[in-house]
Image (tube, rainbow, N blue to C red):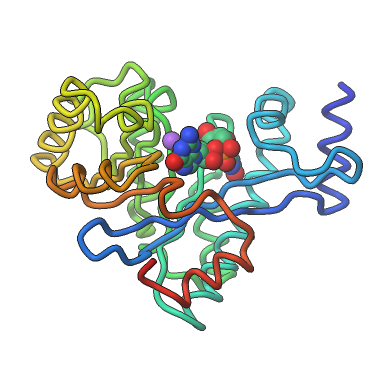
Length: 253
Ligand code: G
Ligand code: G
Ligand code: MN
Ligand code: NA
């Protein structure tokens, strides 16, 4: 209950900040997008990472207004970068509770209109567990597709969804979880898994993003496997908007 009140006050006091991590096209090494990741800038405790408050926000329902704020902030920022620099894709994470809100489609569409942001540049990230109720999730995903938004399956490989179940879902991007990437330069088994995921994704016409790329050797391997995009510390951790802006003006990295 205390955390709940603190989160509520944090929203009122505007203590949340959005960091951005670049998405790199593996072939050209150009930054073609960013992922928005929220942090809590606590007046006493400093910068708090999402893993330390998102679960409580989810439990208390406050993830809905927090997530709405993140989407609005990210889209507004994305619009600015598109105007001042280059067209940039903006990825935003959706939480399970946000995804269950029946007005999610209307609300995403209104935010895009208010901020005058190109819908196809917005990528909403969901996780496998959110798509367990196929009938409901496909209805929401179809609705989001109708307004032009792209959908990414985040943390792929960590949940229960089979590659077969992906076939039935209207998604555009597959993000390979970083647990499959972090040892890929030393593990033939991990190479085989990633290779299989990429080949499957290609046959389903999904774009593939590798997460957690930390080494040049990993990037070269992923390039050979024809992975489309990457994110990871090799290029940059999530950083404040001002720093991201500098990176974008020195594209490619
Ligand atoms: O930024 P970091 O890598 O520490 O993020 C940790 C986790 O928090 C990730 O799983 C990420 O998806 C989640 N997360 C970060 N920002 C948001 C957000 O705005 N909304 C939701 N629902 N989850 C987020
Ligand atoms: O679950 P999701 O993919 O939304 O969360 C992204 C999380 O992954 C963030 O917490 C971000 O800080 C973290 N992350 C991003 N790149 C790397 C990386 O190269 N290595 C590791 N260990 N974590 C990363
Ligand atoms: Mn994500
Ligand atoms: Na992820």
